[in-house]
Amino acid sequence: MPVPPRLGQLPDPIALKKELRLICRQPRGWFIAENAHILMGLDCVRSHVVNGPVQDEEVYADAVRRYLELAVLKVPSPQYRTLLMVVLGLGDDRWRKPEWRSKSLQERQDEAGRHIRKPETVKLSTVRAHQPKAVEALVPIILEDEAVARNRNRTHNQNRPRRSSMGEGRAKEQPDPATGSGGS
Image 1 (cartoon, one colour):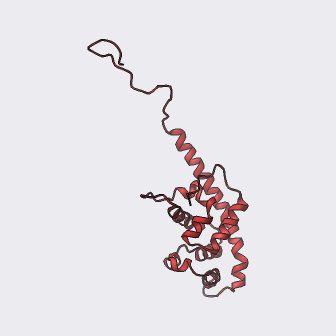
Image 2 (tube, rainbow, N blue to C red; image 1 turned 30 degrees about the vertical axis):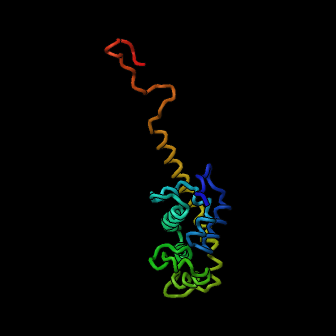
Image 3 (cartoon, one colour; image 1 turned 45 degrees about the vertical axis):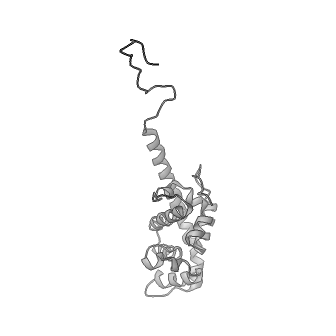
């Protein structure tokens, strides 16, 4: 599967929310690579790509995880932050392991229930009811980060010197000292 291209415009919030819900179900690398086309096309995610010898979809899946880890920290509700970290396999080292991401959604939600309101345990039904709301809280953060990233890229591109296609900026031909004429 080729790496999805950069998105030409800001994503549709509803499509982004659906994609995030899908990733919550299965946060493994191959699944992200196959199903996170919107996220992998965002400038705010692409800025987290680690340059290496091969730029494949697995590299972009890792960038999605690195970006989401930072984005989730901006979610205002500490309970929603915890729920997203556990379910998406972010934050704590044990949740980042591939074995953790391979667990069923129910197992990850159970774990989230144990961490949302320590020392109390939140029921699985409550975690399930709040997971869509937690995802909903993440969408505007991603959209804002993407707008900032695009603005930063636009400003960066405007400040770069441009090459002219009209020959301006090329070194002027020097006259040939032997013939006195200007170059070829």
